[in-house]
Image 1 (cartoon, rainbow, N blue to C red):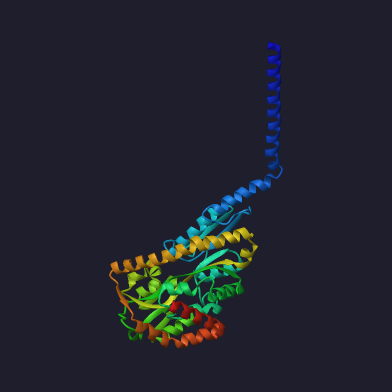
Image 2 (spheres, rainbow, N blue to C red; image 1 turned 90 degrees about the vertical axis):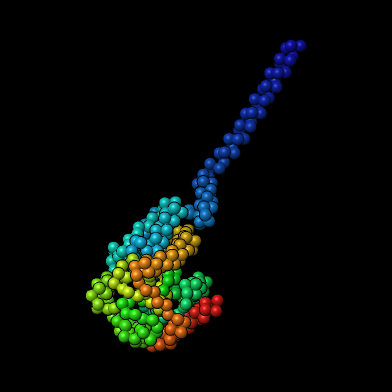
Length: 372
């Protein structure tokens, strides 16, 4: 009887061991099968993880890319801080495959030199204001007294709007990919002459951009415009070669131009458009996932940061100038209307330069933005 029980126990143990062996065999088969397509199964989770990080696009490319971004703004400006945000985001969300090397303060050259290097592909990214100084075909951005606020300008350049898409094509025509264009406040006037109304502009000796359209509208307002390079402007104000200049608040403070001025006159005459561009051939050569990442970083990080920081920077700069003793003078709605009416010669010059299509598109965008 004991022997029978012992035999039964041995038989049961043998069956358990056999089942365990079979179970082990099934487990081995399950884990080995995915290993036969290891590259597929490991790539998929990586892409899923990349896509889930803050909503960034999935990155599957492994190409190592270094982008050189050169601009002429000071490192203290909103434009440079936004460039740093772009750099950090690209390097983070590309899994370290993309690096961005920044050069500020015109370290690699003047505005025209950087522009030429960007078109030639020596540098990959550039930024700054847009308009006729970039290319005559973009002179419609120089229209004076076009909008009344940053909000109107932002609405005019909506990415799904006709004006944005038209401008994209104009940049492609000159070999550049327009990545972003954001309003960054107005060009305002600083002066040593007291200017309290449109009529007081008459006779003002003002430094202007080396741009025939800017010269035309300042002349139409009765001023004496004098083109002077930005690098020589501080000395020109100090020595009295000119008594006024025009720039965004942030630029006036960053370059210490306010030290040589008594008044800030809110002429709101031209909106400052902060553009970001890439060499078109370089952009087209990138893998699609890298292009998608660039677009995502710009839309989700770079543009919101730049827009908000530009407003904050201009507000802070205005306060700095008030604290330094400059008097701030606001023009009235009637003054702005007079400026725009008087600037018709400049509008005619712009139309001759860019053609009817561009001016009609910008007029429609302006009207839509004004009506909200």
